[in-house]
Length: 126
Image (cartoon, one colour):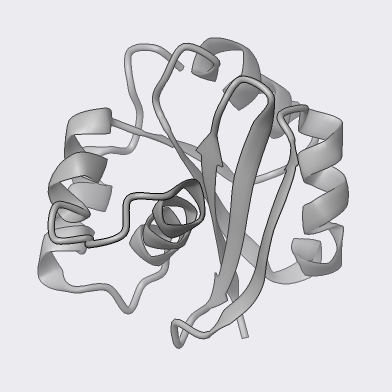
């Protein structure tokens, strides 16, 4: 079983969601927006953690390289692609966004999410 994580990052706190390759949720929590704190939350999944997705934003130039330094398989997603992939989402909350990003990272997504993931393999702010 492989795991995929979505982060919805805010200034003080990040919503964290981990799903497996079948889409089942294994973790929904929040952590301080700090690379070490996020690493600690994800530690139980590290051996099989394949991607940690986060949306490009003002903290991305700092957070993304720090996550990579810690050995996390971080992927910075273009905001417009995340927005397009999650446009039908009814509940606009940090936890729901983290879940949506986690599903974007998993391989069993719809064709739209897969094309968004391919188009979002890097961003100008990371």
